[in-house]
Length: 375
Image (cartoon, rainbow, N blue to C red; front, side, top):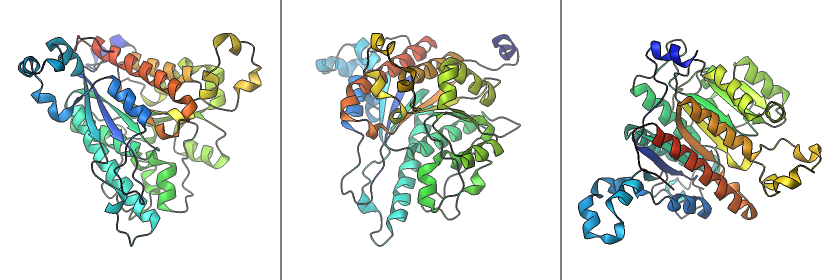
């Protein structure tokens, strides 16, 4: 369906946001006595944008700027208000909050459930504030809360497809989907395939009496989900994905088709009418940081076998974001497994993440709702 047809049917191609909202979603270890935090490199990226705390947003004004010169000019304050920090989903949660008499798997589940539930709440607040939520995640599990909050908020805004009861669609860029019902325990299930909790067709596979996650419900059809970049998926996983009509592409297919074509194909399947917000998840640990350290001239001389192995190219991740932005339907972004970035790759990861944030910021400002510039 082209843009003119969508307009004739009253479908808006573009969202209009006031800015972006950062959310911190680290996991909490049962043995930890300290509040969980994101890695230092992620916190530095966030701080570089000088976000204002969501709690203090309403107190920032021209009057307070005059009384506190260090806050900057009125224009600078307005620019800073483009980025709000909504805080951490862990709040003051520590491993001590889990009953010490429980087994470790149950402790993990209860703590993960609390973080996911709070992440869900923060996402809903960001969206109600007319901002685009960007969630930084350790591990992958808190994305369950992010996606759940996104789906719930859209449903509350009366965004829901009639044919398959979906309020969002999911584009997950990762080496592993881990969509497989043959799990040995609820902790194993949660760790490996958090997205399965939120798909109507796979929700039945979720173990019953799942501690900490009694609040979950599915928000989309499996045909609204796509996993891109899978590395050597097993026959069982491929069968499970295909039986449930979950779109996927392997890392080899991504490399051979190119990211623009691959993501275009995926979006044509999961969002053919371009009528649903897109929840984009990018696993930073899945990106090929080793190749990123090689300059362009050197790349031309590398044998193609060196470029193999299934790792997702950084440029493919950037292209994925660009393609989604061009649809005008980007609804939320999760950057997951940020704690896995090796020390030698932090500088490059910082550079790429900053570029992504700049691209998102520029797009939001072009929506016409906000006119100030960002970093």
